Image (cartoon, rainbow, N blue to C red):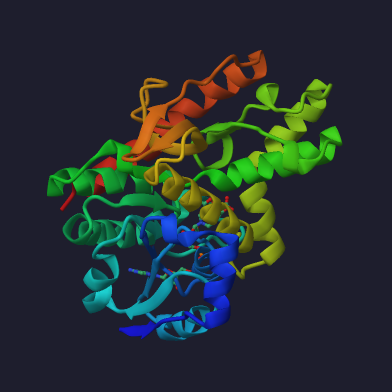
Length: 339
Ligand code: NAD
Ligand code: LMR
């Protein structure tokens, strides 16, 4: 284990003035896959988060360097790097939030489901360790295919007797981030003011942005809404193609992952009215997991919020996504119960 404590006098001064961390509870966040394309910028962003007191960076290689680097930043959290399976338990112990961006990314021409064969096993192993070392942590699943990796995690936790549906989240925040950006551009409204719920799942047509509920309101044509919907659904592929074999979204994903983890921490700390979209166990539709707006609280999910009124186009999209999402969920459940 590599441990480094960054607490310069200047840092303490800055924190006292800016964030009043003395009154904020201690919170440990672990990032699994911390040396990867998402993991590194996500580690940076979590180091900048004043709600984090301990940051554990775990990967199968290269975490000592990442941890040493990030640990020099003069913010609140103490950073430790852990490398290899024998250090996974130490990385996880005492964690309040575990963020998982471990696994392989897409190359052009691949679907997220094409990642299943490798990532399903990685996620299964990591979740078994979470069940053992920090069964009460909130788990933020980033690894694809999210529509299957979240059900895998649920099954692993059920088998271990630690499953709490309020504590397992598929991170779909990047879909919301994209929908907000694309909508602001088209509607010509300030992006910082925009809100757009995105429901369903996290792959192709299972990503369903609800532009009929977008605010501030704008008079967009049906063609414009269709184009915005398609661009949001294909946002990941747009990046995969632009990176031309060098992976998928990492920087925007790290940003989205940091937003979602921050919301989880705020909920744990009792901040009221924290709402984000996430892929969670759900009764919003007949599917056992579904992404929708979720209210976060001291135990994770406090309330899974409904869909609200949908346009005819969105109703159609909802029905179209169900067979694919159902199949992906079932594939994950079957895999987890195989051995
Ligand atoms: P990457 O290859 O750059 O990094 C992955 C990291 O995971 C590597 O450092 C690797 O060593 C590590 N890893 C592999 N096996 C591990 C294990 N058993 N334990 C711990 N770490 C392990 O990939 P990336 O670009 O960071 O993407 C990671 C995953 O996130 C991919 O599956 C990708 O599809 C997914 N992703 C999801 C979203 C989303 O919106 N949910 C967005 C972008 C990417
Ligand atoms: C994304 O939406 O960017 C991620 O799911 C990565 C991918 O493969 O598209």
